[in-house]
Image (cartoon, rainbow, N blue to C red):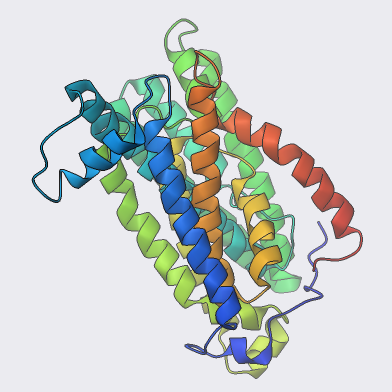
Length: 359
């Protein structure tokens, strides 16, 4: 893998902590994106195999804020608040998490082909979930082991990168170590599937690996929200650091930054976000690869804008994908399949663009 410096870096004003971002036009785009996600959220509450009129959706939501005489059926209220609302919030949260971590990894490693699973977190989470399903630990056990093994995989990758990167390029060594660790954990997932009960346990493992939000409830969402929101807030605060790292370690050290510690902090935050998202959603590919590029086309390379825009676009994108997955056919399609079908053509376009440089 060729790790190269970006041909386009943010302007000089973006290298200072707390420095203002781009002009008012760009921030109007951000506000427009936020409004679009909100509208998409309301429409998503209405669509599905049990359609609910938009007026009833608004009434159900407002009834939790003010006393309103119900004009909707009890079934509609249950569908909106207990089934669709947790799932929609989870889609926004997971999509934002994957997009933000992908944006951080691409900026950190200065490579447009990097995705959130580059350091092995997705493979580690898959192994943790497969073991939990094999042992019959339930949903909480699946989430905890997926989260823990995701962090373990990245810790192993980082340890290898630190120990072997002293004699060469530490970034390249870390990326290669992530590929190897991911391959190793994927092999162990295959081993777990091999010994699993083919009639009960194996289908559950396979379906989880395809990615789904069908079983999400509010406790699951609350459990994942804290590490995801905390990690994204930290990455957003470190946006100016990613701008400086755009020019490479030597330039960053010349500006007084401790690149080793900052890189570790960014990796920890991005890993925390990714592991928490994968733990509740399963493996959903390509979101963290394609959305940061779309965000970059919209607002440019300044990470202080790129990260919040990636969060909005990632949340809206996965919400739209989830709407398609649960509405197109009688049987729900796993999210990983839908994102692969949508993202594969964009990935081919990305390969073509990468021959001319990343702009």
